[in-house]
Image (cartoon, rainbow, N blue to C red):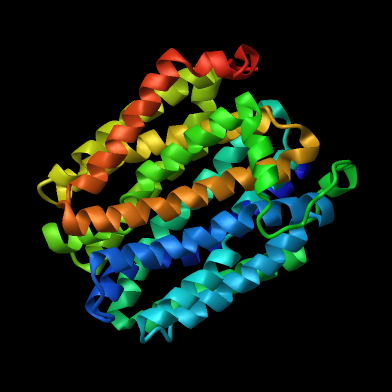
Length: 398
């Protein structure tokens, strides 16, 4: 039980922090359109700039954590998160909103560090289950965060920002007093280049066949989902006429299913099926969910479709993350997982930009169908080629 204490603590830290992030998910698009009077593409920009900053800072923080320790980086970024959410409370113009998202984006650039923390304290056999904890934290953050955000929006959007900031401060205090440091930085023998954005490191990592292919797969998965980050709430608000609270409920259902899949089901599935089969199954469910979202008809229909989508993402994300960690040298976990998180942040930048543009100018169905198309590509690739790039011993249950 004692060896699981760091895992439990990092889970709670990530969960509490993402709870604050989840508060803004269902309300930011409607807040921007109703109160700042911007169009759908501008909503996509507000969402994209958050991820652009993470694209730049994730590898930087990952490398720093390899050298100086995971705990220190987590502490600093949690404080930045709190500042970004606090500033959101005073966003009376689109410019202030963008600044708040930039600060929060820098603060949110620690997920790769949290993943590296888990890699430090787990064996390769336990890695899928450990990475699943990050997914559970995301899932639960998306359960309670959006629901709470939808409720708090009734009392004013300023309150939502204050509460989100308080959650990040709570996560900071948990980390400060309870989270132990790992010894990964004392084992690292590689030279750490502490640049804000080190493109040479990025290119070198992507040149590695196994790691590069898996990072690209994770990029496509993230892009496919990111297409709907802003447009999902707008779909509910403009097409299905959902309230902020109903949008919050839908996001909450997504979180519940994701938490169930990544918290318990993925561990059992990984014992019965190799990773290739899990990726095939996950991409199939994800493709169905994305493709049918714009045709859900009503709240019940949307709920059923989002459950299918959540099953797919709940299987795919921890499986691919686990494979990336398995093919990465122990001394480079922070750097590689930071690069992967950076690439996924880049996908989360491109996704909302395309999603917002497509929603406004090409039709509300297009962002969702785009995601379904790219997930279909993952499905075909996984069936035909994945085993040729990733060693067979790493795609089978250890």
